[in-house]
Image (tube, rainbow, N blue to C red; front, side, top):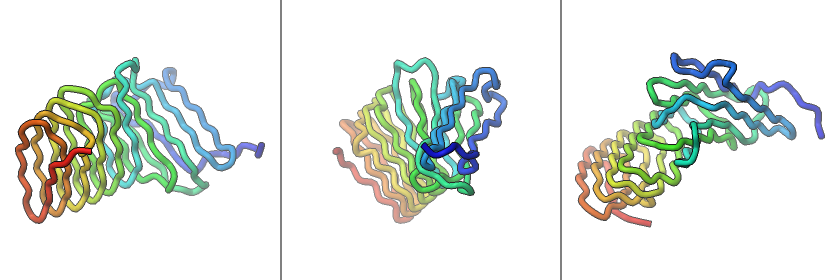
Amino acid sequence: MSPRRPLFALALALAAPLALAPAACDLRIDTDDGSVDLHVGPWEPFDAVRVTGDAAVEVHVDPFLARPTVSVSGAAREGDAGIVTALHGGTLEITGGTPAGVVVVVEVPRLAAVTVVGGGDVGVYEVFDDRLDLELVGSGTIAAEGAVRALGVTARGDGVVDASRLRARTIDVDARGGALATVCASGDVDAIARDGAVIVRACE
């Protein structure tokens, strides 16, 4: 096994009025063979995630979790850009960009909203709830799967919202500026598409 080296590849900083006290923070770093594995938690409760920048993020919903968890894993090298995470008013904010192969993994007991600003790539998995709101501003991507009673989608820019695997009874979708939104509804869809945006109703 190669000797451990200092971790310069990825910075995970906590800065928020609701950020966790140091005594409650569990941080594990594994840098063997260039891999990075950071776990920070447990966190104070939050049910919304906002990604600003070009980070790759996975959001997994597990109703049996006592508290949300956040981890960063993947291959990285010294000098790679870092990300910053902060907690504001029930929203986890992830800012920055992840190097190739590095993914921020968020696990929550409940999810109400996901927002992407910029070119981030966010996957949302196993959502089963009354309502979920997805908002995209920029060239990023949001892909979601699960089932909800009501889905809200807002898309601005030339990004993609793929909710073809997220079944919803009713959907409100507003897409503008070249965005592509794909939704799956068993009931009514209230759709507005402007400025070259495309809305597709399809289920996978």
